[in-house]
Amino acid sequence: MSETGIKEFIGVLELEAKAIGDAAARFGRQTGTHPVTQAVELLTRSLDRGGKIVVTGMGKSGKVAQKISATLSSTGSPSTYLHPSEALHGDLGMVTPADAVLALSHTGNTEDLLRLIPAFKSLRIPIIGLGGNAQSPLARACEVWLDGSVEQEACPHNLAPTASTTLALAIGDALAVSLMKVRGFEAADFAKNHPGGSLGRRLNLRVADLLHDATQIPILPPDASIERVIDASSQYRLGAVLIATADHQLLGIITDGDLRRALKHKERFFQLTARDVMTAQPITISPEDLAYDALEKMEKRSSQIKELPVVDSQHKIVGLVRIHDLLKFF
Image (tube, rainbow, N blue to C red; front, side, top):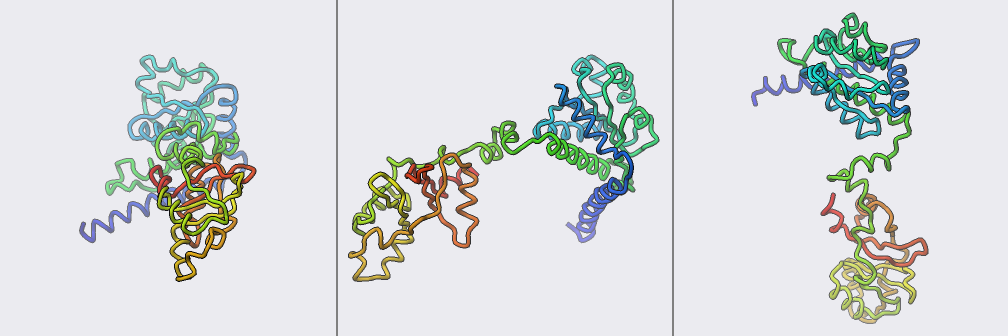
């Protein structure tokens, strides 16, 4: 890419970032009854009575509307996208009196969208508008107008929707997050809506799903000889041996690294016992903890650990989880 092309590329990012920054400042300066407060209250009222948020728009605004609707649904605010033209030919039947409408149009003059307004009005549902023209027919028809105006588009001809659609998308995200906060939507609720993919695994996969249980790992008493420790480590090949009492109360862990360090004792090496080599009171995790939290606990340290004992509330050994097992899923 030429130097001119790189400059244009960076210029677009800067212009669109400025559009969002300008909007944030504009919303921050507004006094009196704030449109964002009004919008969130109207949307919350509809959701609380069992309704949904109907997001609608044409063209590029329609694409943005679809993404906003998806974000709302995934963050606990049931939503659907309604195509204005399809709505005029029957899809309007999905809209109920319990719903609220979020209508996107940068010009505020989109014909098919304006033709839907009487139908929304007849259902007595609130209409929140988002666009760049506060004097437009759409703005005048709405209970609340969210100002999505921009100084210019990133398009060199100031024609293709670019900065305006980026801003509309950002305002939609801000609405979704505001509704999450107001409605008390927590991480556990988020997990229910995201069972699949890496995000689903991060929110749902538990340590219990990935651990090597107590029957599959080497567990030795503290007086075990170093020969027994080496034999157990070689047999199971998990990178660690757990040291415990007779009733499986965890006392310590011996990793392959611990064994290598113990070799510094040279001729005394074979006189050592498990107690001499083990790391006492090692970091542990519960089988009910999220697997992703286990990975964080292992990685976010000055010295990374590769094996983590899994214990119950009585500090008895349940199993062992390895960083290699976790990295397969994240």
